[in-house]
Picture 1 (cartoon, rainbow over the protein chains, first blue to last red):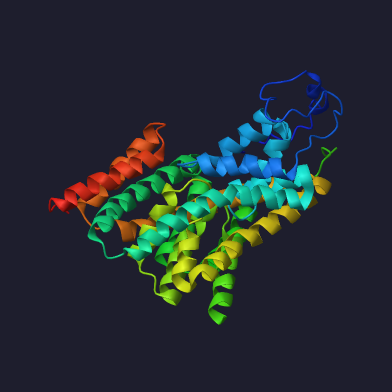
Picture 2 (spheres, rainbow over the protein chains, first blue to last red):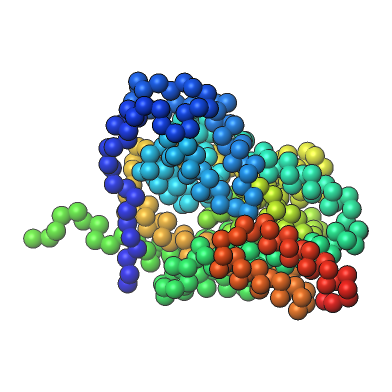
Length: 223
Length: 176
């Protein structure tokens, strides 16, 4: 049974030393941030809101996690790589959208609960305005044949996109027997047996967690 | 008023069930919207497609359903109900995390949830495909899009828009 690689939890303490380099790239935004105070990076609420608003506005076609990584670890250096990977792991384990969860965690780390709120609202706001404008136009002109003609093709394209993303994300799950069996069973219960989602999770989660339970919990080797 | 509460409960529950991201609840969302609010699979796919063209997190399209069901107030409530509960949970767990740290069990839970969430995404594909694919033309467009996005690094928005144009062109000429 193949073990999946465990990493991203190495507690390397290199974060505190890397602030000392004078004026890294991208320091021309609003020049605070002198070379003192190597402790914890700070961000104003406004800064958090604006930076996540930019991501929310430019990330057409997905890939938000990549934008967030660039913002958090390169553009602003608000998190180091270890902190980013740890936050990403939590974002992926918890329900909800990964990109939104990541904004929650980054915002909290930088500015507490208000930081989370500002980051999430910034991230969601542009897309929300977009869908409201386009969606209202759609609802108003539902009977127009032109819109329906275009949307038929767009719907087919979106189906292909969703399938491709599923294939990309699930490559490890599709190519190993154990996850593949869990995956297929989940699909059958949901789509063919037509159970509702809470029941599917109630059935599948305990089984899957049992199958993936940690092996040899005891720390010391037996004599 | 009761409709708003129902909306909030429905999308709040979907929020907490969305393991691995919003696409995991697509199938459930479509069934619930059809059963309770008479939103047809065709409209569901149209709104979903609009959502894919939008920037930012790919589930902001829930606002359109909220608006369709209950106007501006419905959109607001739906948005809050879909994004707030999972965010609060993540916030709380994130803080707890800093105290407990990584454990083998967290890794086990994540490994276990991954295949489940991919299985649910497959159900999402199935639900969307059932409504969006109505003939050889749409199947062809979906397959071509699938191949292009899998093989290249082109921005999916362009591919989807081109699919829309091609689909409209063919349909206008009478092909299906």
